Amino acid sequence: MINFEEVLFNLVKPMVDNQNALSVKQMESLNENEILLYVYCDSNDTARLIGKQGSMASAIRQMMAIGSRSEHKKITIKFESY
Image 1 (cartoon, rainbow, N blue to C red):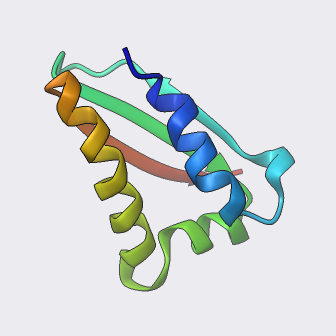
Image 2: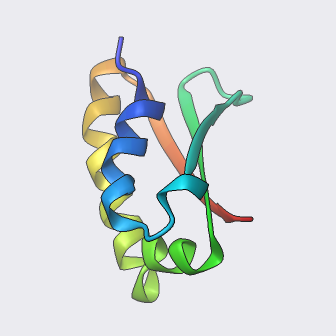
Protein backbone atom coordinates (compact mmCIF):
# COMPACT_ATOMS: atom_id res chain seq x y z
CA MET A 1 0.00 0.00 0.00
CA ILE A 2 1.29 3.44 -0.92
CA ASN A 3 1.83 6.00 1.83
CA PHE A 4 0.36 9.00 -0.03
CA GLU A 5 1.08 11.34 2.87
CA GLU A 6 4.83 10.65 2.64
CA VAL A 7 4.88 10.76 -1.17
CA LEU A 8 3.17 14.16 -1.25
CA PHE A 9 5.43 15.51 1.50
CA ASN A 10 8.55 14.48 -0.44
CA LEU A 11 7.09 15.92 -3.64
CA VAL A 12 6.39 19.41 -2.25
CA LYS A 13 9.29 19.69 0.23
CA PRO A 14 11.83 21.03 -2.32
CA MET A 15 9.30 23.64 -3.49
CA VAL A 16 8.87 25.46 -0.16
CA ASP A 17 11.20 27.92 1.58
CA ASN A 18 10.26 27.08 5.17
CA GLN A 19 10.51 23.29 5.22
CA ASN A 20 10.16 23.20 9.01
CA ALA A 21 6.60 24.55 8.76
CA LEU A 22 5.57 22.01 6.11
CA SER A 23 3.28 19.14 7.04
CA VAL A 24 0.98 16.82 5.16
CA LYS A 25 -1.95 15.13 6.87
CA GLN A 26 -4.30 12.48 5.59
CA MET A 27 -7.85 13.03 6.81
CA GLU A 28 -10.82 10.74 6.90
CA SER A 29 -13.19 11.12 3.98
CA LEU A 30 -16.90 10.40 3.89
CA ASN A 31 -16.29 8.63 0.59
CA GLU A 32 -14.42 5.35 1.04
CA ASN A 33 -13.03 5.66 -2.50
CA GLU A 34 -11.36 9.01 -1.78
CA ILE A 35 -7.98 9.86 -0.29
CA LEU A 36 -8.10 13.31 1.32
CA LEU A 37 -4.76 15.04 1.91
CA TYR A 38 -4.09 18.47 3.41
CA VAL A 39 -0.83 20.34 2.86
CA TYR A 40 -0.10 22.86 5.64
CA CYS A 41 2.66 25.47 5.23
CA ASP A 42 3.45 29.20 5.47
CA SER A 43 1.21 31.52 3.47
CA ASN A 44 4.02 32.43 1.05
CA ASP A 45 4.74 28.76 0.44
CA THR A 46 1.03 28.03 0.02
CA ALA A 47 0.88 30.64 -2.73
CA ARG A 48 3.93 29.08 -4.37
CA LEU A 49 2.41 25.58 -4.23
CA ILE A 50 -0.87 26.77 -5.73
CA GLY A 51 0.88 28.79 -8.44
CA LYS A 52 -0.54 31.23 -10.94
CA GLN A 53 -4.14 30.34 -11.73
CA GLY A 54 -3.65 27.07 -9.82
CA SER A 55 -1.23 25.64 -12.35
CA MET A 56 1.22 24.22 -9.79
CA ALA A 57 -1.57 22.75 -7.65
CA SER A 58 -3.05 21.13 -10.73
CA ALA A 59 0.31 19.57 -11.64
CA ILE A 60 0.77 18.26 -8.07
CA ARG A 61 -2.73 16.75 -8.13
CA GLN A 62 -2.06 15.09 -11.50
CA MET A 63 1.19 13.57 -10.21
CA MET A 64 -0.53 12.19 -7.11
CA ALA A 65 -3.50 10.90 -9.13
CA ILE A 66 -1.19 8.55 -11.01
CA GLY A 67 -0.32 6.71 -7.80
CA SER A 68 -3.89 6.68 -6.53
CA ARG A 69 -5.05 4.80 -9.62
CA SER A 70 -3.26 1.68 -8.35
CA GLU A 71 -5.50 1.85 -5.27
CA HIS A 72 -8.59 2.53 -7.41
CA LYS A 73 -9.28 5.68 -5.43
CA LYS A 74 -9.71 9.38 -6.16
CA ILE A 75 -7.23 11.71 -4.51
CA THR A 76 -8.15 15.18 -3.21
CA ILE A 77 -5.44 17.61 -2.13
CA LYS A 78 -6.16 20.84 -0.24
CA PHE A 79 -3.61 23.55 0.50
CA GLU A 80 -3.82 25.45 3.79
CA SER A 81 -1.60 28.07 5.39
CA TYR A 82 -0.82 28.65 9.06
